Length: 279
Image (tube, rainbow, N blue to C red; front, top):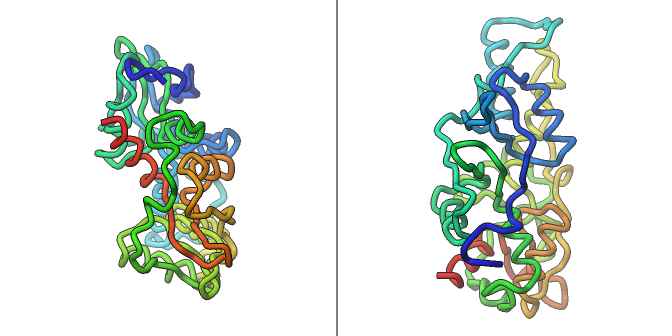
């Protein structure tokens, strides 16, 4: 990977939308393309905003709350919501000729996961934290072949049981200040769950409930937990990155030979190692 440009990290000619694209259409395309962000552009492909999966979820929740507040119990036609109604307008972009480290620094410092790539103020591509993680998984970049053990702090790890409810897991995340939790049965990990997984599932359940009925019953976390392939402390960080990219995971669990939980390695953990190694 050249330090002078973003190289193959950029997805060129990405799908983009106009400000009047319907929310339902965006959600369907996210599901179809397995993406989490899309740039909103004008006819000249100048970036007007960015719509993320989180923006969609928040918009859907706001719609439901508004209907309940207004006492509407029968919705025969879906509400018309456009991209311009939910998009983030203050969007950080990066020039096509920017270097690898600068792009990675922006993602980490601003705690974002995607950057529109522009040339002469026109959208030409997209780059995401997943692109950096994939590059790290090849084992060529600095820091990629360090042992996983280097990221294990030895501090007690926050975990929850499989029968924990969605709301309880969200509260646990907020208390711990994390966005990903280990789901474990005793000392043995069952998998991982991200805040986005929980919010998405809660929104799906709420949309299935008739407005005249009670709130849906508590749903156990096990329903949405993502299986994490076992990573040993002696394996390399590039192997942890490969497991995350291959299985679309936000993190992987680290276990010993007896499958006892030793720690959790997140996407941000790996990207920080990469950034520090390039500094």
